[in-house]
Amino acid sequence: MAGHTTKIIVVAQAESGNTPVEGVVHAATEEESGLFPPFDPASFGGQLFWLALTFVFLYLVMSHVALPRIGGILETRRTRIEGDLKEAERLRLETDRALAAYETALAEARRNAHAIAEETRSSIKADIGNKRESVEADLAARVAEAEARIQETKTAALGNVDAIAAETAQELVAKLAGKVTAQQARSAVAQIVKG
Image (cartoon, rainbow, N blue to C red; front, top):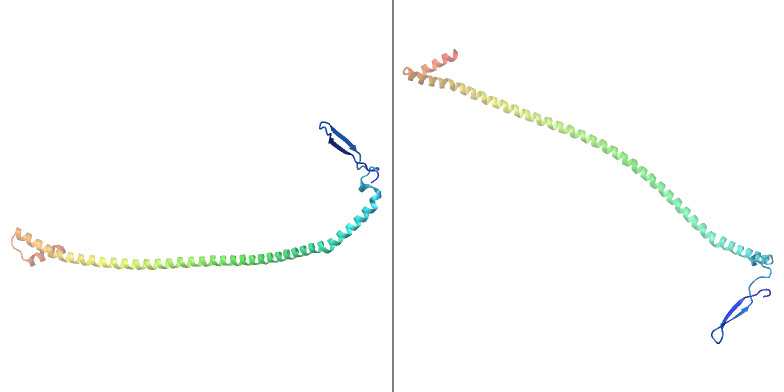
């Protein structure tokens, strides 16, 4: 190549071993014009040719290989996203229907619970009323029975009082005044009771 010089430094040891020997060779890669090769107007034609050739090659590769694959990927994603959106909408509608059914069931359960509570309250009141009437009737019967026994006991006691009083009077009179018959003692007690 004309116009290029290369600088090579060679260091060698002399055979004596003490002094190095230097030699300089000029073969440097400096251009005589001093321009960087891509900016040299003489090489623009070749550069433009290779640029056009590379552009056409990349255009053909991109249009026949890469872009159809990318388009297919984008179409697949678009289809999947649309399917996902439709599924999400379907699930949202199902959720709305389920929520409405839940709220309806909850309202119905509340009505049923209120009705059951009222029915239970009425049943308990009726049961308590029936038991109270039964207990009151039982107590009234026991009171009547007790009153009848008291009356019988009172009548028996009063019937015995006359006899006991007559006997007591007969014994007292017998001790104080002499003998008295049971008939005389009874008639005396009856006269005192009548008054």
